Image (cartoon, rainbow, N blue to C red; front, side):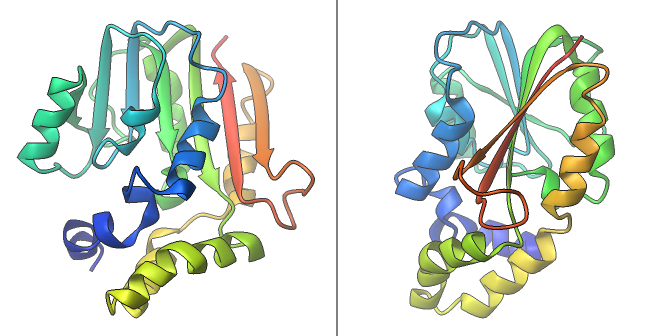
Length: 220
């Protein structure tokens, strides 16, 4: 079910697959906030799907690997190549890169999809160099405000396309890990690395109406 949904409906139904959507723009800009003045020579993005996040990366780089467990269309790969990005098939839980190869690793709305998010976190930290940065964006699903925002954006699109039930079931099936569990896994990195957590909206806490969390780990 998930494979068919992503192949046939993701780009047109899910707002996160549409780089022109205001919700998508905010989400990706939230992750990139403060990064435009940095220089990261080698960058790895995991779970990148069709490379939506690449449109919001403003900092300089020499190599930027866009990876996912699914291969995008040839047109998408060619577009990424034209814009200076390299697509490579890769699983975040078993990355085909040597230790300390990257200056920055990016994960956008991925960890809650993983069966073993702790392995994914471990792999991201393995391939980033000492002093390198891992930036992770995770939605607060389930939560009241996330569910409401999903309904008002992706949900409406799904209704228009007569795909609401399929889209809803895909979300519930794919979002396997809650933010509490992911937050606990990432908090384990505090003692060994520099760790920062930001969230939106700022006035709400984890248990109430927060929509997005951004975690940054600088590897010691």
